[in-house]
Image (cartoon, rainbow over all chains, first blue to last red; front, side):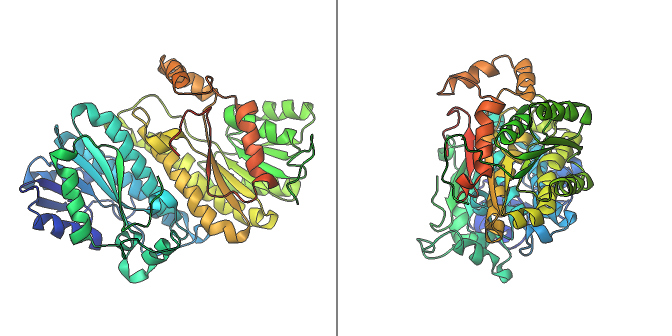
Length: 229
Length: 261
């Protein structure tokens, strides 16, 4: 438990909301920011600064920044997508992640951590979600690059890879279909877990100073579906 | 077609290949290797003044190679390049998306300019989408394949080129997703992650004098690859029947430099 950990949570939707509640339950002081540009913009500049600044003014310099990037509402085959749909599914989440990193950087000091919560399709790809999965892997690379650039300043990053069932809209069934395409046997732990009880504690763990020697890494928390290196 | 081979067989006889960024470096090396294996090759080049001489040189060597002007940041240009290929040759068996905007020098995340971001997205990510969409019906008809160029930077991140690392990572997972979507159409999609001595690499050496030495230190085979002799054969292989059961994969062609897969 990290009582009083100042956490800036960027994102909305059931996954982000569940993480918010779980972190508050564990004693974090949380400011939740819904990013400007979540409508498909590709601005990596100042568009998100105001929201990050407002969050920081509420809680002070964050110890932990958590970004939950947007995901598309439902699956669309690549050949059936318009260019705008592609930009919204693939380029906009990467731009949002990059903008979050840039906007947060001036507020982060020694010991702070930046975490992206992404579906495991980042590693394995997903039919119907080609752009979104590609964006997630791009963001995973950003976490690694940021770890390398900002490590000398005492900043760390991580990716928490969760089951697609948690990241994709629950009413579409897309997460379950995507997970089923990944495994022959189903989750080793019986299900995809939930943001409040299974994922938020891992964010708490990542915020703990005891985890300070881990950076740029991906922690897979999907109940035991994705087990590739 | 059986993948059984006799010595000297040409793996791509009768095949048609479109290579973006084919005027120089990796694109030209792969195009040359594929032409040498019997493929008709179309070099899609932003600057015909460099692409056309390369095509002429390959034709003079007896290969079936032509050049079309194509700025991959333009969806119209990509569609036109695909259509020009099919009009000229009647089919498209393989599309290699190799072109990308210049990576510039080492850049801090905080200092990345919007226009650099936009150029990388347009040439690496959106061009893959637009190119894939344009090529799909022809690749399906031919039972063909698509090859994307990725990088170890996309797998391990990059302290100096964060945007490049992002787009290369995204292209790798893009290939996996497309492989899943297009498998039922008989289309394979794979990636090559090379390290080779290209004009871009030579520029990088100029910007970072220790880069060459560092690369050699981490390369078990002790040298930097050659676009034609080291990377070209892998592109030939992936486009050929020899690789007919390989899809969604990344082949690192880097002398063992990246061992993380």
